[in-house]
Structure formats: C-alpha cells, structure tokens
Length: 455
Image 1 (tube, rainbow, N blue to C red):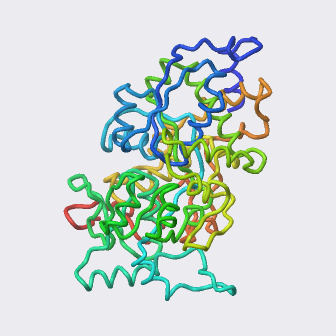
Image 2 (cartoon, rainbow, N blue to C red):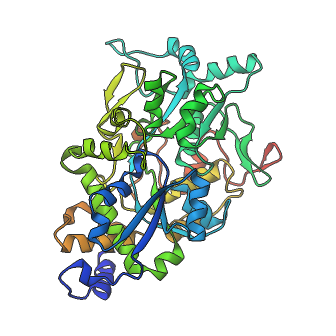
Image 3 (tube, rainbow, N blue to C red):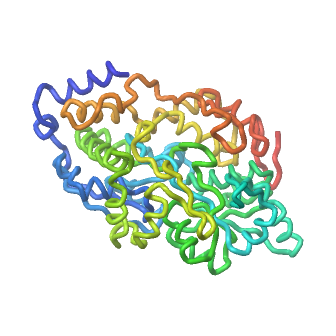
C-alpha cells in the first residue's frame, strides 16, 4: 500500500515545494451538505480554521433537511459532497433505494451516538436495573431490561415505537443490535416491504435527528437512537434518559463518512485530494492535545448555521463527558473521536460490518458470498486516496507519519468479544460466519417471504 501511495504522489506531485504548486485543482468552488449533528464537525472546522482555504478551495456548507435530500443532492450534482451516513454510499452503490456509485476517501469519526428512552419507559425500567456500590445505575444497560416494558405495552394493546434517522443509518443498525442483544426482535425488511417491521416486537421508524426530542416529547415514539446533541437535549429538556452510548455498544465503532460520487473522484482527482487533506487537518485539530480544542469546536457548532443547539448541550458530550439520567454525568473521553485510533482511514472492514447488518435484517435479500462483501467494500471505500492525501501532509510537515496506517490492507484486526455488548466477535474477512453467529437475524440461505422467514 505504501509503495502505491508513493507512486501516486510522485505521479501528481512531482517535486514541487508546496501543495498549491503541486496540485492543479480541477474545480475549486464547492458546496458540501451536512445534517445538524456534532459529527459534522470536521467540515465546520475545515471551513472556520481555514484548512479549505489553504488548499485553494472555496467551500460553501449547507445544512440539509434530511438524509434523503442530502443523498439526492450529491447524486444530482447540487452538492459536490456531503457528511453522510456510512450506510448511504454502500446502499446506493448496491442499488438499495436510490442507485448511484458513491465513494468515500475519508471516515469522519468514531462513536458519537446514543439510545434514549422516554421518562415513562425509564421509570418502568429503572427499578430492575443493577446499581454500583455508590448507588449509581450500572452501565452499559442491556436491552433485556426493556423487554418487560415492551411486553407491558403489548398487554395494554399499545405498540412500542422507537425512532432512528434513516433505514441505512448506523443508528438503525445500532438500535437493532442493542435490541437483538437483549432478546428483542426489531423486525425484518423484504423486497416488497421496506418498513423493516416484519415480525417486530419494537417498531422502528424514521425521524430526522433534530426532530427526535420533540417527537419523543409528543409521545409519538417511546425512545430513539440518534447522534449528538439530540440525546443530551432530551436530558436538558427533562423529557428522556439516554440508556447507552454506542461506545458501550461497540467500542470505537465507525460512524459518518464524507461521500462523493465516483464520477466526481474520477473527474476531479486533485480536488478530491485537496478536500481530503483539509478534512484530515480538521480531524487532527479536533483531537489534538487531548481534545484541547473541543471548547472552541463547541462554540463553532453551536452557531445556527451549523448544529444550532445551545453550547452547553453540545459540550455535555463533545468535551469528554456524557450525562445519562439528569445529574448522572460520567467521563466518556472517547465519546467523540475524530482522528485518533486511525479514525479517518476508510477501512474495508467497516464497510463489511454495515453490509452484514443490511443482510442480517433483510435489506440484502439473499445470501452473498464473502467475496461479494469484499468487492463492494473496495468499490466504495478508498483508502488509497486517503493515504495519498496523508502523505502530502506529512511531506509538508503538517502531519506525523506515525499517525497513519501505511501498511494496512484495509482490514482492521477482528473486533474482540469484549468490545461488543453481546460478546460476539466480528471478523470482516468472514462475514457470513459472523452473520450466522448472531442469535437474532437472517442466516445463510434464509430469505423473508411475506411475513415469514424461509430457508
């Protein structure tokens, strides 16, 4: 991989002393989309700290109404790129939903999500939850404690509804993972039924992130999975209690990506490199010196043109803490990770996990060979572009060579059992064996037909 990077750099950079001279930008006026979440921070920071300017890029950032509008904007060219759900480029490329070849040269962050329940549900769960010696609720909280609540709702003839942000979102898969790990069936998808509620005990539906707290307060949903600051907003408003973070669900799990069309990457290779360089610098800034810049980042994100939530709410998770029940604030220094642990490297194994969850719940209707997962991952995730941009930064003295995984083949080491809430390890090189090891979910050879699983 490193030899490939050096060859690529040599072919584009030659021997020029500065980046501005090295790269002749094919397009320098760009518009990027985002959703109002704290993990859009690399885009805001790259803009506010002048990292886009340093690369000769004139960037406009535009908040989008929802994830579908954002994806459509990238596909039709109204947006040059966007802060995306990791599942969106994968789903689009395989033709689930809108068909388009989307790629990512940059993963935006690790962790950053939570699952919140209403006050009513919390009061029903709380008496059964174990506590620590100091009387605090023991975390992480298993969804098994939610199971009797759902059964109570059912006995009263009421559905148990939860919100997630998009059918191919991390949030959908994390919420499903948590529920299934606690013995709760979150439902299946089928080619002729895309509600995802076939056979469900908990009914999941789409709610845009900024609308989650209001939807919970209205009683339309009983809980939700979303990124920040919308879990902490529920705490501040006194309308709900976060029960688990995704860091507790799966330690250092991949979150958003920066997505562009494959056509954009091919037509504007130097511009793509320049964008990636600026985003890497922004991610470094967000994590450097043990998160020393996070307070400034919070101030930036609180502005109405970005996230637009109160700085105090954003800071509650962005600066290394997370508040569960009101007054129960705990240290979670890695709740938001933007650069360390090779957070920005677009690992094929991350893509494979998302695809495995799509297959688990029926969005991928039929069994695919392990080789298919590898091929799709490599068609969407572009670590070669990322490393080429990183090499340029290292050569300019703007980044440390030790901070990048030059020799990676694109696959992380298997996730150990201790890093996942259900104790089931994940090896991206063997996706079908992994899918078959999960107690709830489709297995090899199974499909959803009507309301039943066949095979």
